[in-house]
Amino acid sequence: SHPVIAIDGPSGVGKGTLAQYLCCKTGFNLLDSGAIYRALAFGALKSNISAENLPGLVNLAENLPVKFVDTSIIYEGEDVTSKVRNEEVAAAASIVAAIPEVRAALLKRQKGFAMAPGLVADGRDMGTVVFPQAPVKIFLTASAEVRAERRVNQLKSQGVSANIVQITSDIMARDERDRTRTTSPLVPASDSVIIDTSELSINQVCDKAIDLLWK
Ligand code: CDP
Image (cartoon, rainbow, N blue to C red; front, side, top):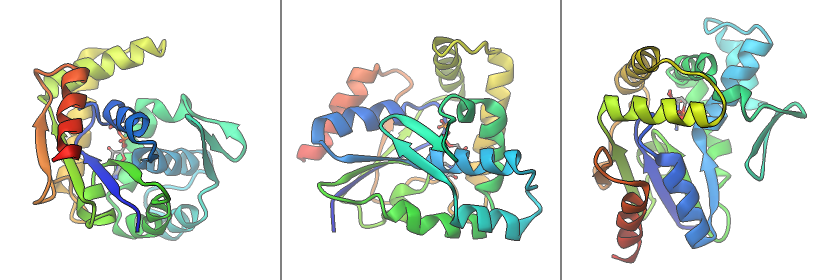
């Protein structure tokens, strides 16, 4: 099997940036597992499948018409890259992600990303559930304030207006849901290296991760 670098942690810790950096450095493939949950939530909202409609959600998860092309997310032929990034979809993603049957339905698809020469997997349960055998597991953390600030800056850079108070409360609600759900709660794998990024620049985080790869 191919080597996997698992990167887990809550929203706004810089997982996506680190994952892209490590992909460039290693030539590995990328799995943005959050994008799969977001695509599922997007599809459910689009097709009016409610969070209570378990068979509907599982069926959609098993046949999710999403494709990842370069850095774009294509849903039923439509480029939804920016649409799936909004907070409505993020909140819906964390609600459907709490359903055990939904997570089970997405497991195989996620494992399928582990192709040659290797994979950088970004998510919440990459090191604990999806790729427990990953030789490198990184868990990123940061204070809620720092994470909300980063998310606001990220949204602004995408031309989306954002309110720091609203974003902070959205992030905290989502984290709470991700941490307290019974299936695959957001916890560091016991063999992961935890990096607190609150006081670190992107470059410093990337340097630390590169050091881990050579250990
Ligand atoms: O961009 P951000 O880190 O805020 O979120 P994301 O990684 O795109 O994930 C969106 C939501 O999907 C999270 O809040 C989780 O509830 C869920 N998710 C999950 O449960 N398991 C994963 N491996 C990835 C995401």
